[in-house]
Length: 265
Image 1 (spheres, rainbow, N blue to C red):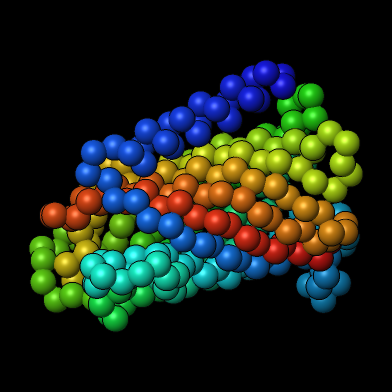
Image 2 (cartoon, rainbow, N blue to C red):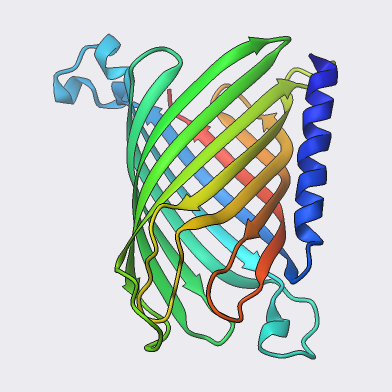
């Protein structure tokens, strides 16, 4: 199992490396910082008339994220290295466990994109998740998340371009594994890969997205358990973005990821 794990990590890293150095791909560096809070309905189950067993099957989650990118050169070729705020995101969701390993989630996220030219774009993204987590032997935990999301442009940054439709449908599939680091009690290593694909062509106000492959997220890092409720995440997230707009290169953004999670269960 350990050899398979090492092979899987090596394969994903080599795949990401080949993408980042593909012809015509623009490489950038960035940071992703997030804070996430979650819990079950047991916190307020009595007020809803639920017993503890029923309340424990319902879950909630909220998360805020800030993304920075070193992309000043896009508006000023002579600009030095600097991390600029580029995206702000917020998620909220409610879930229900159908088994100890599987759950359905219904959520809403808001995305604000701050462009180098000072303009911005905002997109609303309702979504539905199927989450499955299980132990697969050898101390490994396997996670699968299938997400369908609907994208609505709230405010555009341009008034030109062809309108393809004002609602985008996107499917996202994530697979991940994690394992406690031998000799430690509170540190684990994780690896995940997530494929994003548009199921239709859409775009308004000059923002054009064509059906097909959209993004890939590769994540590798460490989880540090502070106590039974809180964790800190530190790692790498490679964000490959396939741009379908005319004269827009694909992007490979190498991100340092730092996050804090707290579960109230």
